[in-house]
Length: 122
Image (cartoon, rainbow, N blue to C red):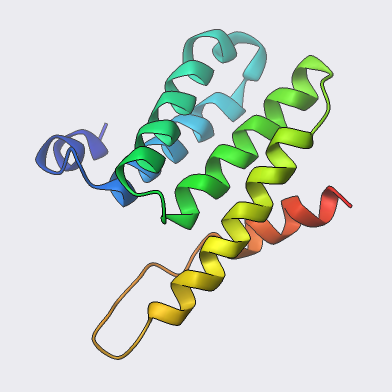
């Protein structure tokens, strides 16, 4: 996997850990029935690690919310946990936007996904 050297070089970087989890979530989504048992726990662990590395990383929280939402659908559970996490992610995106200036570069992806998830919770 191409991300492995990057992950090993930056083990404490929340953004890279969240991306690693996103890759695992993508691999899982190809065939959830056969890959779910192996990969769902790994994705959840990576998102949890990314959140713990930086509690203000909205992408980590948003991705965890999406993973939780998918698992709730798969197992027939309610979306309350994932909806709450999506709302938290949106607040983090709002806070992050306030930090951006000409000397501070941040990734720009993820907000639309969090908004879609939060909208599906209404």
